[in-house]
Length: 431
Image (tube, rainbow, N blue to C red; front, side):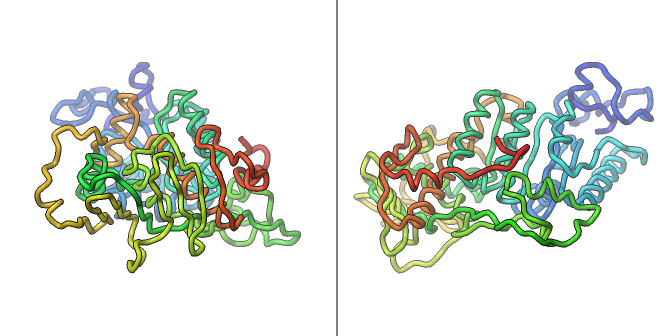
């Protein structure tokens, strides 16, 4: 930000942390010459600065924008957080250097490093937080940010239990917060997924019967408590890393991809598209059974979702195959095909299909922060997609058919399965 004013402090007429800024206000600060005025910029904090989070901040394959959020003129990065303090310090230095170079001054000091999300969200100047934390910490961190009045973009898995996923959806609604999941397929990949959903929901493959999700269920198993562990490095906030899990001693690892099974990570991409195509963003199945060890979900309208690939096909990236009475559509990140083939060639794209349109996932989030409209992957639809993955995991663990109530979100006649809807959370990180 060329004059160093944060969005909220600008509106309040308060000086920013860049106290050395010149008295004369440049034209760019007023929004002239095509620049975004400070009053329109969204002030953001970033939590988790590894491969995924660092990619969002500085630019990566999944951000679809050179330079990431830092490269956007409509965003001001005010805070960066990681349980590895050096990673946060290095990121803050890089952010400060970027803004100093952009403004032509070398004294920018407007981005602070943190190793605890609770300290970052205490900054009233931050409007929104992007969370790319460890599997087990994502939901807890999201709830902390929402309750602090921040809008949230959260990378998957957005929840590792159904109860905490419901808590995120309810909290976002109660606090009037905007939420976006990092299941970006609805917005990106040249609109292939949206086109497939338009064909399915528009009835072009006839009555929908089955959907192949290309993924089984999944879940998370907390680590066993340990009596012995290594000395915690001075630059690691192990308390924040353990987060809501039962305490275990430092074991030398602070990676994000731990304790999950079944593909708790990728699976949410698949089930997000399945739910979208089935027009089931606010509901779930009535029954989960197992076939060849894979979950099969039956919905009230008779549609079945198979937790695995189309027979004879292998695993594909984030895709789905929709089978109807008059044809089928298969979509993956690099593929969109139909049977019969002419379905894609001859079916016009509707002017108003009723299917949410977005061609930029990060852009959609920021626009909704401004307008307060629901995002394309809002808290409720995200919860339902993550729930489908987790329900499949529970059925696989129980090894039997389970009935599910999608309204009460419980198993009506399986107390043992209901115990797997949540897990114990450690204070003060419990929700």
